[in-house]
Image: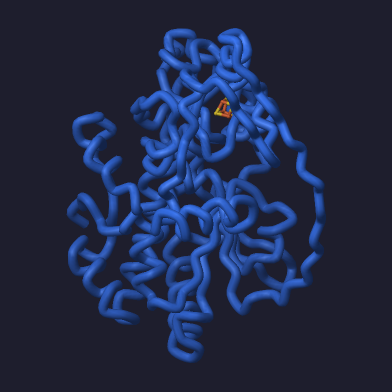
Length: 341
Ligand code: SF4
């Protein structure tokens, strides 16, 4: 039997630099990741976390089938069973308590996924104007977004330093050598800061005083986790739904087009097919939209427009197709393109 080995250009979506990667795929399995030396900006750089992500993709502990929590722990169920029950319970909560009783949280993996973002905004806000949408920004950068809202009228109008031409860089409360830059998309940020000093400029770091806040939270009535693992958080969920990793989906880091010091565009095809029963988040959201469309006019419009199943799905990672999306910097959530059901 002949082993088919492919080397596919893609990029890391763990954090803002979006480092170029070469994925080694053997017979449809992602076996290794290495930095892409030919990438025009990251130029062969990738951190250990990004390179080790093939271990996450192949981790035996990963959730690859929907799990339902029962009295004796989690048990596998099929997708229709999970989505039907989640939609029915969500509809009951919506009917009884209104849209303010419903919230969605997403972290970095979603922020770097155009399809997740374009699906979740209309779905959550389609359920009603009182729904809650939380992101990792709600935890660590809400002050920056609020400042932009107050100064410029839009939270995502974030000023980006012109690093290649900066003479004095003052950073308060950030540590980009470790974080690789937050809310700033610039591969090799350590080199870019060194360049400022080499040009005769200055880089000034102001360390923040660290504080910690403990919060006691009351558990929600229905909690659904879209995750790679059963972890300390998702262990409390009623369902854990298996999602694709970044290498099992096509992608374009839509929202981060606003935060680049040197503008660039990169899109990637999926380098391997979804493992197990894993689905992309947009697909799961579409499944819920198709089951909940009677709840609000907005969801009915969405379900009707897309045949009740597939929403917000780009057919292509061609830059010519994707480029118009970059203009949607306010993330209006309006579906840009749909597939027939
Ligand atoms: S710096 Fe961020 S984007 Fe680059 S390889 Fe590491 S985790 Fe991935």
